[in-house]
Image (tube, rainbow over all chains, first blue to last red; front, side, top):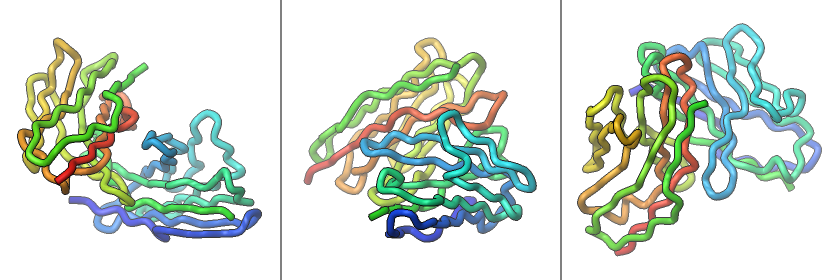
Length: 118
Length: 112
């Protein structure tokens, strides 16, 4: 099946710094990628839809200036948490629909990135 | 709008017990239905899916049947193992948009 890879898997940073998380589709092209944030007790929150060659579409309540998303190529999307604060600590997960299966709604997920802001 | 409701967890079972995790949905169209599994510290991976009414998805001993009349897609396994301990997410994707709608997840803990 299709493979999506995230990096880094864990990152610890100081409050006020910025952190970049990469999401790559390894064996398929992804014109669209999704970024989720996972809160304690499991629930997934869709943060934004990343579109190759255009601006990301953010969900209501997500600060676009804080969570910068760039979809530079058909295989890479990045999420940058700017001026991170402890409340941004979370598990961030990216996903992408495989182009050939897009109509079924099936997603392929990265391994997730655990961000801890001190 | 579309929504997915899962039973709250955690579900705690002994090894070899029978598992049911309930999932019901509301959707305007004819959605595809999915179960995803998340092992500790990892992302989600597709466990099984069904794309039309009465379809049964199955994988790794898990099964779920798309029941349009009851708008349900309950996950079952006849004999769970410790290695099945994970969080299970029910999801749907309506034909108009392929952005899935997820349930809140159900944690399964299996004891030896």
